[in-house]
Image (cartoon, rainbow, N blue to C red; front, side, top):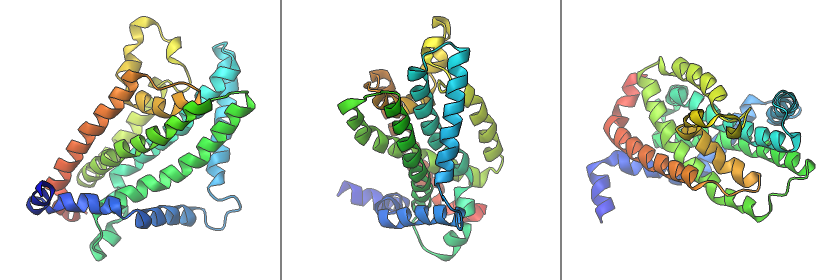
Length: 268
């Protein structure tokens, strides 16, 4: 009853969840985007997987030699970190223009706007699962045995989706209103790539510089996937940061969507 009163007071709130519940639609649209992008190619989306594998193998060999780390530990760390980073950076980088890309559909069809957000996420999660399989194969080749802890991914990957959905929605609304947001995020993500423990491990930092990792939310999101893949449980602090980010982003996204949803079409 309370939810009904809320949706009557804010119709955008109902639309927010209606878009999420139309799973078959946004999964189909996300897969269709991949099909259009790789139409008439031999390997299709596997080209991205091959590119990712080549990148983490080459960088893993290089940085294990530079930092004098055991490649059996550094390569899986890099592989899973890079695969998860590609998911995060792909969604964050594309989110500011997701409504602009879909403006022709938005202006002609009455679909919940959140369908387009979930469409973006589904496309990148399809790529993510391809690449994650390659990272798992690399781990197995190097005699890694994650064991039953790997089942934690059944909880942490959906948690990642729930966190990225409101983040993409917020960036989509802001990017439609402020067109400078996309290049700003591009520069910011390039910087964060080197400040996030992907090419290196937090153990490589001196204790006085640990705050680079502690207050980096992207690190904690990566650990939601990387720790189970490496046979470890995610740290409680990382889990707390992820859950706190989820609550904060959901509240901000719901507030922003209810307030600005009807203005998005005028920002095109």
